[in-house]
Length: 375
View 1 (tube, rainbow, N blue to C red):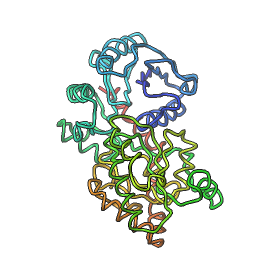
View 2: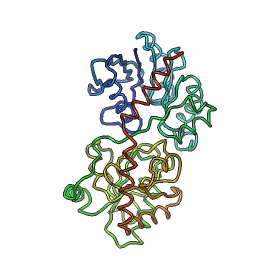
View 3: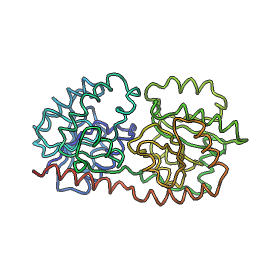
């Protein structure tokens, strides 16, 4: 079987949510199924590390798809041409985009419908494109895969899709995320926070990640507790981050907030592994990989009560209303003061995270690829 794959989000040193899902699952699919050929379709020069084995044929074809007009040209002209040229049996698209001008059966991975719930958090051009084309992509796809039971239900209800057409291939954490011993934690804290304990947030900085309320919560926490606790924020400034920058410069206790930008997985695993707790009060997530990353490091979490996050968090987190920074602050205080509670959360989180593995994710994805080939 010849499987063509949209790999435009496999970007060296720039892997984030969808990119990590693509990397981890595709690597396993290639390794587990050497008898099949994979055609990886890139929209720009690729890194050799993404050609996982000899059964992968990399293809670069423009234009670089980073704007709605270019999305259309790349998918409906360039990708359609490659699918025909290589006589693909299936087209796998992990980024939620499909080619509407091909007859090749499509397995479409839709990670979330955040643009439907929070349209204001997208660039106008991207919002218009997603609102217009996602329903068409859903109708075009022979199989749909998503990353949580919440997103499965959301897609089914929003676009009137039969539940049996949608598979759930959960995210997981990278193998680098492991529990650190006391000495290693102290080394990391000495390097980044002058030896102080810290809360951590990880994710690209844009409005949906709710960083402004996180900062307000941290200010309230510091005012109410005589503590040298720090807040470490890991992630690139992605889009519409003006309010975050203003708070960064003007907020009280700004010397206790450490901004680290984008880090590679090895560095991020160390930062999360040495943290006192993860605070992930995002407004909306299709999954929320940092939650499972924290659990694998034996780090508890404070997590939003919205979308997929309670499902992913299980019993290893304190649940908050992300719209209420006082609630976030209260939970930060609770986990800071109650060591017994923190220990229980760590134990529950570790147990819960065991159900999420990349092998399981790849297996479900493969099952749905095979279903695409059936008449």
